Length: 149
Image (cartoon, rainbow, N blue to C red; front, side, top):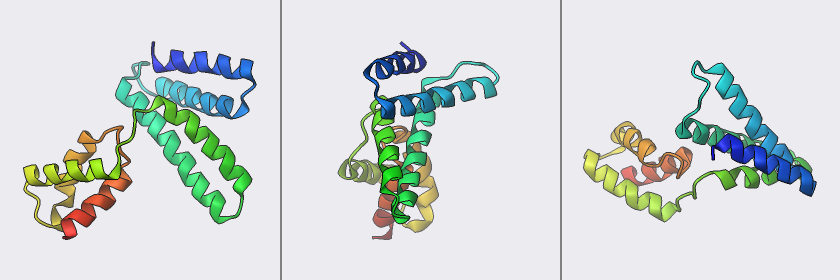
């Protein structure tokens, strides 16, 4: 079952359950998938493409939450957080900071990085290793801490 089929089935279930938050999030995912399929040449999306779409949607909503909270709009932040929780069900489990740090240490050794100047080399390898499993922003923060020591 493809992601699009899962989304369509979940939309039907959310409609029957009258779950507005899930319905908003699922419709946004479906819209993003359709947009990606029609804008590309092939019309088909790989699992990596689908994963990137989901990650982008979660990232956008988390950024919106930060903005809404800074403006004391907790009502809007709450709806965005509800959508994040629905979309994250379709993403693989995220790695903890300790797991990221452990893997980064081994990547640093394999690349031979010695200082902050080697951040680019390490991030090139790390972004592929952590694809879908960790936020690159968090990986970058941990990497900077490790390379500065």
